[in-house]
Image 1 (cartoon, rainbow, N blue to C red):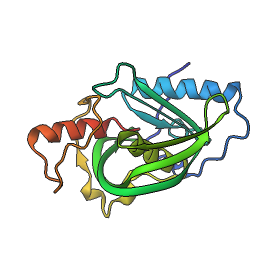
Image 2: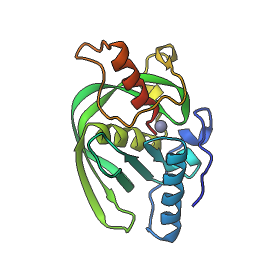
Image 3: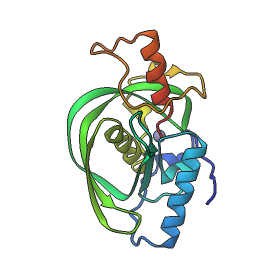
Image 4: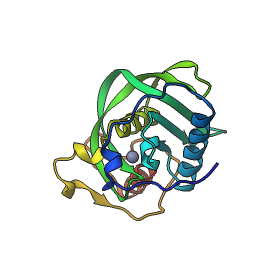
Length: 194
Ligand SMILES: [Zn+2]
């Protein structure tokens, strides 16, 4: 396993479409291990292969919410969103756009199909944080960054690097207003996305 360099948003590779994995073999499992190690080292909760310069359709996620005893890990090869519904405005950040967060529309619930690290077909129906991460990471496979959903980059907010909590829920209230305390939680969560 090795920690790899995470490309930043101006790198053209992040704008390319990644190709499907034809065979889930040892090289793919080694890539997954590197991705997990790189994500943990960057204190992220998700990562897509193109973020380390590998244009293959592979994503990982790992996070621990307050009630979890163990971190929840998701690894998906050739992931595809087959269903989505609900909409919420998600505060998010990206390891490839360090130091900023923005608010973008995401589905509340998604169903995603793909393959596991052993090559088995899997189908995940999820909501909340994992649904949010999966949408963000699958976008990376198509060369899309969350900043593309903003009308202007002026909508990005600068954040202090290194503020992070392993929390996964929206911190703002229905109107998108947030208290000081909610703000720090919200920013902390967003900063940790992959
Ligand atoms: Zn990202």
